[in-house]
Structures are given as C-alpha cells and as structure tokens.
Length: 144
Image 1 (cartoon, one colour):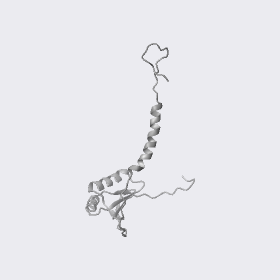
Image 2: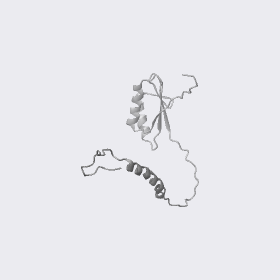
Image 3: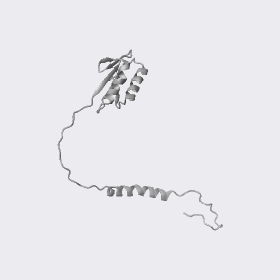
Image 4: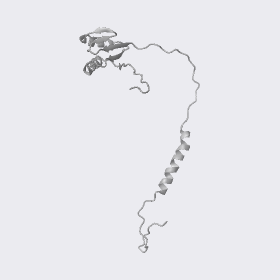
C-alpha cells in the first residue's frame, strides 16, 4: 500500500481513489459506542408517590344533533329549524361556558353547498367542535 511519493522517479501512476476503509471502520464503531453510553445518560429520581383514589367524571359535553335532509331542510335535535334561525342558535350555543359539540348529519343526496353553509355559520358563531355522523356500512365477504 504505497502512496504516490514526491520524487518523480516512480513508474507507478498516482492513486486517484479515496480510501474509504478508515471511514467505514469509524462508522461501525460509533453505533457501538452510542449503544454502550446511551443507558448511562438516563437517570431517574426515585420518589414514593402518594396513592389516591378518585372516580372518573362521567360528565359529557352537550351535543347538538343537526340533521339536513335531501331537500335541505334543517332539524335541530329533531326539531324543524328555518335557515334564518340557525345563526342565532349557533351563537347561543357558542356563548355557553361549556360549548356543545355539533354533530352534523346530512342525507346522501344533500347538496354540498348546504352543508358548507351550515359549517360556515357554525364556525362564524364560534363553535369549536364539529363532527360528521355517518351510518357505518358493514361489508360482508364477497359483497360490494
């Protein structure tokens, strides 16, 4: 393993390839060093925490079930609502201390424009949680 010398009398050509063996050696040793030293860096303070028992708070937020049928009619918790009455109801719900969740159900044939208008009105009023409710389709093997 000879490197090109400075004397011009050698008949061998200069070596123009980079010797990567030292780099590979270092790259193989580094993961071993990290695996050995990593557990030394994790140190925890052991404390004796007090034990307490409590019950879960079963309080669930109120929900508003807003249904839009195929013709664009609105139903607020199964009560017919006009389009003009929707914005004040959203504003009243958004002003509550614990905002209710809006569960939006739309018929398959409902125009998207109507759904977008309802969502925009809810967002404008300040409602934070809007969810879409769908009926699950149970797929049977071999069924489409």
